[in-house]
Image 1 (cartoon, rainbow, N blue to C red):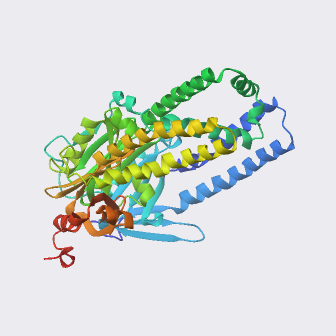
Image 2: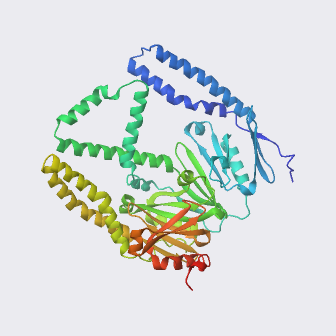
Image 3: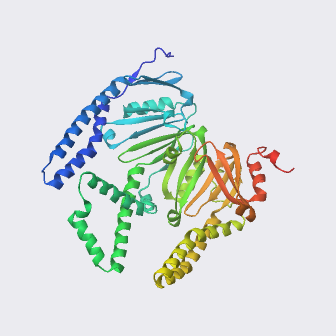
Length: 494
């Protein structure tokens, strides 16, 4: 057996130097746009910018060379060691048993160069809790990942592949926020690029003419046409983004202890989740996706970084048919844990009333009041608009409140706690009962009057806490004690 002293040090790939130059794409692209916009006539400022780019290129290249020469790592029998730095040397040693996940990513430039970035997470919630190597050759990164995640146990007797990409899932991509938000985000980004290189977008001929034609044409025709264009562009953009993120998607058990997600077209990603850190799953059904019969799945797992990183890396199934989502839940947690379609305990009718009242107070009353005040001050037409809005909006709010109420529910399924809530973002959370570390009960004067309380199960994974909203106050403590026997016994009347 190789001892610690005999373990050789390894270095990064020399192609790392080329990868460091990828940042030049954006400024050179902006410089090219400036050339096009000015007809090739550059002023002193443009030449100054080119000189600055050259200087920064030399600095970045030198820094990349130092990083390449001064970074070395090795895997000893009991630890992963990393040495970095020139003037300030950093020596990090992480015990192998502390490593919870190993991710591989590669942007388009790194893929062309055959490189990958390896990130080994130790389960901490800060960036400093992870070791990152940028960049290794793809075969070296794969071998190192296997070394760091080496565990006892073989692949399950059943097919270890739980789910793979299906081109038909693209139809679910437009059923997301990006069908609208993506268009405005893209337009804003392009606008900032043009503004950054000194081009005034509103002075471009076709843009100016488009705004003039829009204002001078019949709005009853141009507004629906503009919405149609936005929806079309949004749908195309959403499908393109979906394809880039989930190309060659594959969810599988690499061994009895590791769940891995691989995906990506231009930037490839590979996320590994340790079974011992898996606390449950979340079946997500946003309103539009639910209307189309789709759902997505997230893992409730520790060791995936802070909350923002966890939300990005915990997705184990993209928007797909709900039957596929249930299949993934079933095979990730087992037959009992995957029963997300079974009946749940309904919540008191007071929960429906509370949702309707909140909807009226936040969505109906302010707009109605604003229109009424303006109508009193300006024109009686707005008074009619206020009445029409109240008449039309109130039934819609009630329908949404009823949907939110029907979504509420909780239950116990053997070793699993099931929680469901939400209408715009309905989620069904299935948690391992043994992972619940504490309970928090929250109420207000209004909820006490209604006889309901919100119970939060604290879990050291995922969102850190999952709420059972507006359950019967008289049953809350007893149910919580049933989930984790003995935790609340001293607070119960026996």
